[in-house]
Length: 314
Image (cartoon, rainbow, N blue to C red; front, side):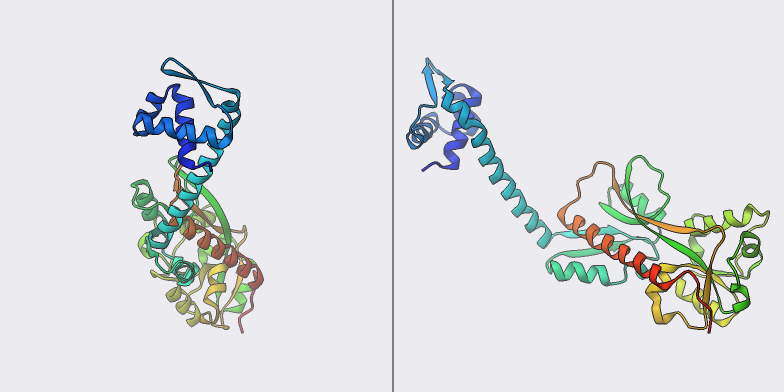
């Protein structure tokens, strides 16, 4: 019966051109390698080498056997790697980067899905804002992350996922009679989230540009850190806000029916992507998180489409 060890010895002898060199390459004694080659020849019923002095000349049978031996050993190596990958996944740690609003977009759903599929894995979701997360990626503290675009850095590889349309949210129906333009946005009383990141937040930047092209400056009447507080202020009628449809879909019943929304004109979108270092090969655990997060975000996009771009407050 042909064994993998025999095939290894055969390939080493074929490539090295001598039994002595093959033994040195494999870390075995020369007689042992010679014996394995003889066993293989006996099993196959064919001579594989002509002995010339201390060297070996492969026969035609050896030339025919070589690719099959390489394929067999390659398949075994691939199987071993697959098993190692499973072991790493079962006991590995996922340290994945997320931005501030990920608690709404991802919530606990992605963590629970990963734990359901692989109970032994550890999960760390890290980050407060895209800027912070990108810095950790560059430093090698994270393998991959979900971030908001744009990302302009050749050291990072970007895989766009979804775009989430921004809408103007208000309790006042008369403010929602038509799409909100730059001049109207510039005059509106606004409650805007992410106060600590206002100068670099991509959503704020888009809104500011929309207003500035009309000769105005974006002003927030109320600055808060989280979306839920901005919604609460808007529900009171004291100020309006701008949020993404995906967020409104995910918040569900937490968004009062007294609130409605309309699109902005021109339309604006928050865009999201998976990012990792250019050329990086992700660990099995991180690759699993990327898969689960990507599925979740695509589901958010479908939910936002069903929610609709216009809602009249009740």
